[in-house]
Image (cartoon, rainbow over all chains, first blue to last red; front, side, top):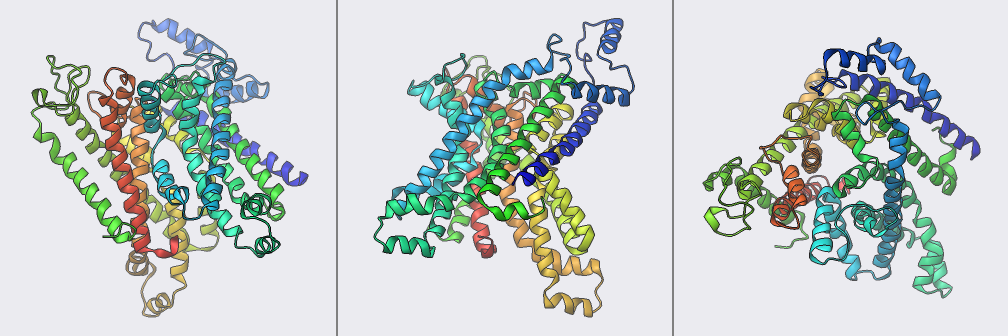
Length: 309
Length: 274
């Protein structure tokens, strides 16, 4: 298990290096450059600014300098946001994004598993029959539609929750964004849990447990749930990728002060260091999330470990 | 008329889609207003019969009925064209890999695997922000270029299994060249699968386009897309909720119709996939 984990962790670095290299050159291919949009600058000031950030040097030199600084943990300084260090900007926004992602993951996993179990407990009941069409509808709708609609219904008409905005340490502001982000997760996980539970319930050891006189609910809880959760766990990889990109969407819908806004803002302003910082952080997060899901899967299912990664 | 029957579902969804297409094409002409006309005497009017603003107006007095339908037209157009781009790349890549087999196949599918691991939305966002603000052609390529991966996998698997069929051996024995066999026997047999996946891809493409427009990276004002209308509506939901509700409902109906149609077609055309 340890060997497998180490091999997988080592595998992250080349992927990250490729991602960084491609991004570094692609964003410099785009028309325009930093400070090009600022009309008020004189030619001399602009030249000085370019020199200050090393943009006048050859690309290869800039690339080497970026990697060298990165190796020392320095992400550089933002061109557009008052020379702030990129690491500080992203570090300030990340807790908000992380809280949102964690809340949505918890909601999605617990809500989805509970709904899936409820559907199986009452076969042909209301939940069982409504689950599949409701999940299909939920999965078809993007967060930037469900978010504002939820805000309109729950926030404006019912006045239960704040519509948008963020004050530190007020979990109420997180409820609607987290639900919006979690909805597709709840739908997928509920569907997966239901299908996989139904399959497990056909196994012979379940029949044995029932024959020994255990009740339906008890068999479901004690014997069927754990093996049934293996597909759910392997879904956590794609789910984590969804959470990383989905939080970008939900943050912009609810105007949360997370890190999401820096990506679009940075790319429009040609703020190279800021975009690179975002690529690095979100790329690492995606890779780590997938890795975590794979390791969990390998721990649950030993066969995975012995395949080549 | 049993709604569980896939053919019935497909017909119903196709009917709704047809109605939406007709509305998008002909609907704006029924109103006296254009999508960019400002009506200063009727600012933020709620839906009703005031001065022929059937679905109301926005804060600048622009007619919401016309703007929503022209946004719908744009979303449909971009969705279908981007799907076309994806289908072309996906079928060529998948059929090529499956037909070539061996090391070429392994190499081509490895590329797909690597691209699969990247978060699309992230890439589309960066590309659109860097190159394509307001440029619909770039938008199309950026959205279309990321959608082909699943299709390439499916088409490759189908091509591999087709290659092993006896009628392929017969065609080969009859002296057909590779290109002729691909055109006459492989591609027609892939058509069903491709139609199903393309139908399911259109709503995804529409979502990408709408989201980019929602962020202000897609179409530029005064043009409207369903995404930019929803964004504008969300900002005024306290004073004018119809500005959010109308485009949101149209987008929801559009997405659901495409998804229901795709699922139903899958049930009809290739029942093995389920």
